[in-house]
Image 1 (cartoon, rainbow, N blue to C red):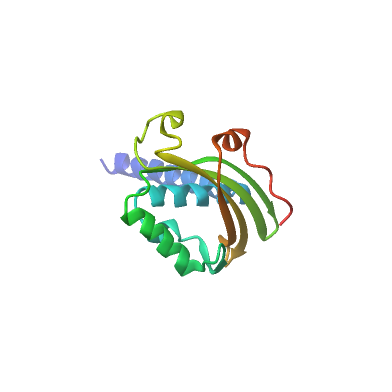
Image 2: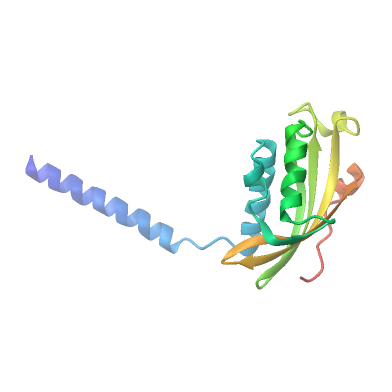
Length: 168
């Protein structure tokens, strides 16, 4: 009995060591992968009406479209509270990181109803597409949006894809 417990403990220890070793040797996500994850998390949070999480990666230094970070949070909250968005989906993104700065062009579909309905059936009455031009910087080891501009775009522009942003 003691021997089988000892064998089980050794096997468990080896499994734990293998898991820790795998995690330690696994490469860290690239800057582009980190930014894509940030964008996906923000879209999911907005869709789930978690305003604080939707703007979590907006810098305290943010400026864009006449808004500061607080203004962006209020804008998102206003849309969420009035039920303006049922679905928030990233249609495409072009990301250009360079050191501790990055630019991103992101196309986002905001749907007011019909979650799961083909986009062509929603436009233009129940959905809109916007292109966000973002400037990101690394702050305390994490990517943050420090500037942004956005505008509505046509479905044709979204299908053509976001143009790669210029150098940061």
